[in-house]
Image 1 (cartoon, helix red, strand yellow):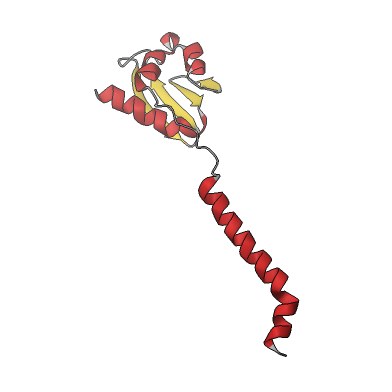
Image 2: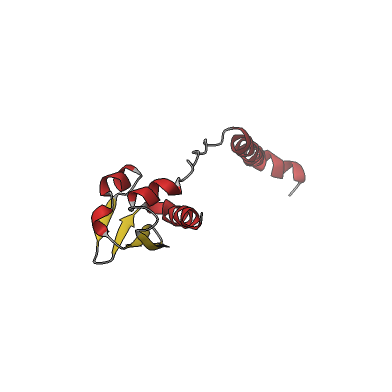
Length: 117
């Protein structure tokens, strides 16, 4: 088989593949999806909603949940926690389990930072 015969049969596929790679690269470079800006997590807002520094014993994040061990459940502002992004709040004897989604770890870190200051 001569080289010319090969190119006669396969040139549309070769050119089409090269064009697809080129257009895909241009698309990735210039037409990226806009990244959502992450708003900073204000640890002081969560600390206030949980009843203040003296009410919080410990916080721990597990996947999408934040477990907040508190001294007095009565002074926790659950409405404010919902305003801050909690989709569900489960009250137990000595703690709250707050469903926050993917930001649970960041919220726990912000609360711990605020408690140390």
